[in-house]
Image 1 (cartoon, helix red, strand yellow):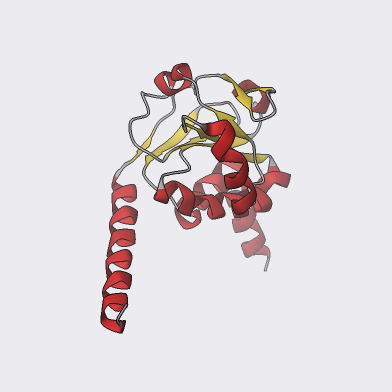
Image 2 (tube, helix red, strand yellow; image 1 turned 135 degrees about the vertical axis):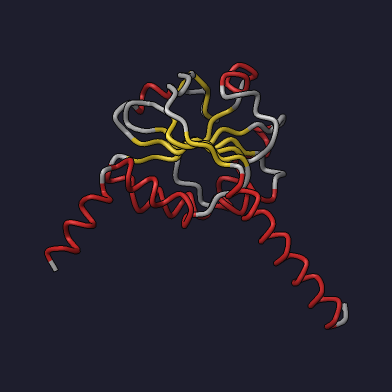
Length: 180
């Protein structure tokens, strides 16, 4: 591959990333409706319910391993989980992969996912608005109301302020800044 072809490929990738980021910003909606409860299985066959996380802020992400934007946002979710788990926050990822039991274990290991990964059912897909595009992400507050819904890739920079606000950390940060 020549240097010019490589530069063109990088330029196209940068344009695509800028487009996805712009599209994401345009495809978010605020909401205050109750998040539908669900009971889904993890890869060990254990049942996990959204209601198990009442009192926590949840970032619920519908994804597929074959979806490039889905893969790209996972590292941000790992960082957010590390940063805010102690404050009552968790990421829950729901895989819509058809062959999830075989493709998820290497995906989880390769990306070092540190949050629950569950297997989608047609019911949960319908309950969350007939998930038609990936990724889709819902920020759910402590009372299990949907605070924000994104269609398309999101980044840590986009979602972190909303997570902090839902956790009540925005107010603490501003109080600490005033003390200094």
